[in-house]
Structure formats: C-alpha cells, structure tokens
Image (cartoon, rainbow over all chains, first blue to last red; front, top):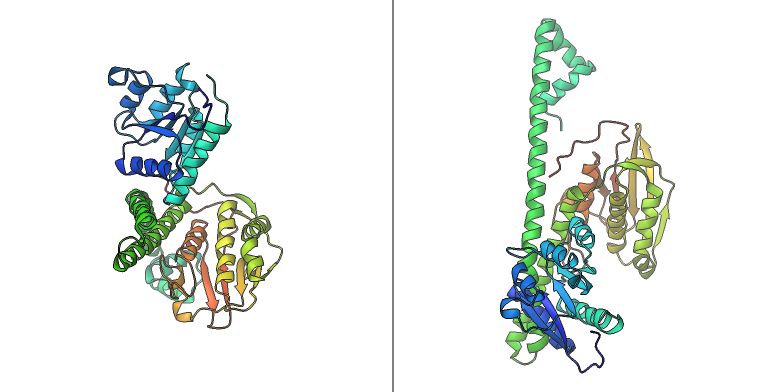
Length: 147
Length: 284
C-alpha cells in the first residue's frame, strides 16, 4: 500500500548476510530520519519464508520494498530474485538489488530477472545515506505502487 | 635487448652478415634443424609467458575483488566514527581518526586502481576498426571541466583509424591528457595530440609543456603505485600510466616517455596496424 502520510512507518525487507552492511543501512536510515521499519533476514531461505509468511514469520506485514544483496549463503540472491519475480503476488513488490558486484554480467542478469533497479554499495557513508534517502524518496514517496 | 637465442631465430630471414658466416661453417641440414629446434623452444617460452601473464591478471583481479569488501567496512565505519565522535573525545582521538580516514582513502584508491588494471584484460572488448579522432574527442569532452579549469589548450591533429578496442583507446587518451593537465608547472597547459610516421610505423604522441620527467624515472612512471611527487604536491593514485601501459600492451604496442625536467613530456605509443595475427589472449 502506498503511504498516506509521512508519519506512517513503511515495512522494508533487507536480505543481507553481513552484519556490518546491515548496520550501515540501519545507520543511514537513522541519519536521514526516514520512517522505515527494516526487517532483516540473512539468507535466501529466510527471505522466502518471510515473504510467504511461513513459520515464525506468520504474523509479519508484507514489505512495500525489498533490498536484496546478491551474494548470500545457501539460497543466493539471484534465486531469491527469480522466485519473487516468478510469483504473481510477490512480483509486484519492487526489488532494489543492492550489492558490491560491479560485474556487467551481474547487472545484466539482475535486470534479466526483472530486478527493479541495481545499485552498487558505495564505500562512503554519505553516499550510502544519499542512496537510502533516494530509494525512500523515489520508490516509497514519489512512485505510486499497487495496493 | 635481443638475446642471443632470439637473434638467431631472426636469422631465418637471412638478413645478418654475421650469421651468414655461421651458416657457411655448418652443413645446411644441421642449421635447418637447429633453427627448427629454437623455434620450438621459442614457442614453448611464449606459451609459458602468456600463461604467467594470465595468472598475474587473475591474481590482480581476485586481490582487488577480495580486498574491496573488508576495506569498504573499514572505510565506512571510520567515517561513521568521524561523523559522530570527532570533537567529542579528545584531540588525540580526533587525530587518530583522521590518520585512519586518510589511510583508508588511500587504500581505497589503490584497490580501485587494481580493479581498473585488471579490467583492461578481463573487460576488454574485441578489436574493431576504431577512429582515433573519436577516441580523442570523447576523452577531451570528458576532461572538459579540467581543461577549462586549468585554462589549457589542447591541440588535436587528424589521426588514422586503427584496429583496436575503441573504448580502451579513449581511456588511454583520457589518462595521458589528464596527466598532461595535472603536471602543469603552474603554467597554462598546452597539450598536443598527434601522430608521426617513423619507419613505416605510426607513433602516436601526447606532448605537454609541464614539469617534465627526469629520464632516470622514464620507466618507473609506468609501474603501478609509483609516484614521483609528494601526495600533496600533485594528486593521483599512481595507477593511470600503469593502465595506459597495459592497454597499449594488450594491443601489441609499446609506450614510452621522452622528457627532461622543466621541458615538458612527450608520451609516445604504437598500435600495430595489423590485418591479422592479433596478440594472443588467454581469457578466463
């Protein structure tokens, strides 16, 4: 659902195995004072369980946006992406691939699997804040998403 | 310098007088066999060289890739420390944070440089007919802010088309012209991009009126991470010319610099005009 007022908190799913990266994303959200609730899962199996509201994720709200790292242990980010975009319900959720890879092959593959956009993780916290703010501003404020 | 062995292999063309005497001393079939043997050895050595080059490429690529992640963590968290705690601890702590930031920044530049170097071979595109004028124009457009900022004049002669990776030649000109602008000696930089024909070979050049290079360091400038000046005097990460050398070598050419301190520098390179027999590349 699109957010009606700025004060409402939007659920975002972060699929990321590195605690260091997760914390950086959290700090960026905090720095920019964004009304986002970051749900973190550490691999692809957990991500799919979360999205299908299975097991301990039975009561979670469906996220408005997914931030997906490509390099995950177990079920990788590419598999997660292809499962999400192969599912008629889940494919409506925008998936932002946020990864360290700068390989043209990965970029091509991600868009081939219908990623909504591909962003390379920066090595600078100001840039990261800018990216997180940009994602929030575009995907969760300006863009109109289906209910 | 040619060694004894390769000098003898060249004999096959029969152009050396000294060798003609050697040949006269030996029965014809012995000479033929010896030459064939040397050719085989040369092939083996070439094969080994290309294998070693490939291994080095892989090593650089993996090193750059694997260092990137932990370094990104160090950089980001030191930045967070600085942003949140600078001025809130004590002056020693502030200074330590600054040194750590500076180190992380420099290492980042080096890792980026290594990636750029490895991409010359790993992300290189096949050779096609490339208009060098277009490569130079793109490089100049990209450098426009720096050119205008320095009040520089860049003169470009008409260049031929060559069989090459056009994007890499643009990068080559970008680095060489960028270099000419950076080491400008406080004067208004004048850069001349052109070509000369020397004994049937195109020799391309980028000449400037900058600080020049002591001939003693003429080889050293192309070595990775070598800097001839203090960091605060001239910026740069010591990788641009190493990338240039790699690009030219991927095309089977040579690059060198002719200069004297205070008299500007002329970077020259060749791109063999080949219809066939492109340098062999080992792809991962």
